[in-house]
Length: 418
Image 1 (tube, helix red, strand yellow):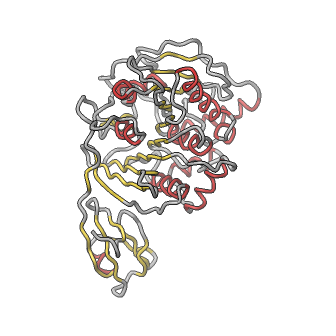
Image 2 (cartoon, one colour):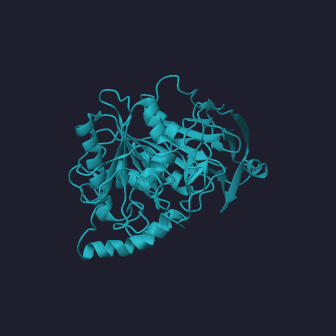
Image 3 (tube, helix red, strand yellow):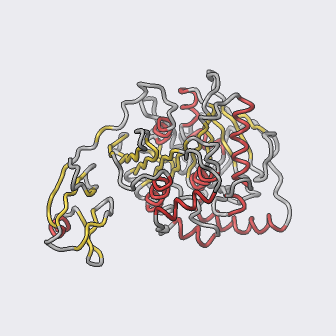
């Protein structure tokens, strides 16, 4: 990706990590660049105006050799919330600030926006190294640098330590999951956009498989991996928002399901949503998994008709933000608006909230459900279309009630329909 026409104010970039280990990581990173970067292409016309970013050159220990930038709104409240944003491969902090919509939302709602930037010395395509244990473990490498950026934002700018959040795209989304797992003591919530579950891969070969076709593990296994990231932690776990395009072939939508399985299990919740709704101009399917106190601990947002990237909705209307003037920013729903809302940073009355999805119930035999398109069959068993919940044998003797909400998505609802 070419540098921004309006680069952020900065000092010279970080030096490469010395030694043979750096060169090994570099060779692995060449392959990793293919994992989440795909081709580097020139940005189309219509780019957003450059966001005012300031480079922070001394934010404390920086073992991952990353760069830190800050966008500080003119009107910032006392003890402001903090949002740490992680760009995708081939991107940089300026591009992510200009097009994701996060900077304009920071100005609108009054939070401090911190943007991390990967270097080509660490990874030729500037992907965060989410799949390397040296960079994805607590107290080490890039993960430690990112944690230090959040801590510096709190100490240097007076940020609220109880309202620190993180979000990222693709490799940045995968690294978001790393931070939520490794630093549950530092982040209240996170949003993973087109990313992957924590600890899906510990080497390059497995990372390819995680991305496409994806790796299916049990919710209990996924949750154990999160707990193993910080075994002594007994406090609350971060809330998690998942965003994924349903036509993503780079990081396939199966990863949204695995993320859901991982974080609902971490929170001790079932993998079936308690509520579903439709949000945004394109009827994105919004699933909620609330904790016992009613707070949504996990949400999954399945964005229709887009591939790999950050969904944005350029404009100044309610719920709009972002720009499509660079690769991997896709015209759709403004995910950043809903992410900020999930973080609890949007003021009351800023948007109407999710619209309840209309529900229709169907009671019939498994055979009839399959014949009428509400379920599928494989290996003699029947599965609800959409949710893929197992319904038992494919025959006329097994009967279930399926709830359809939104259209085309079916879940078992034998005792609570509609």
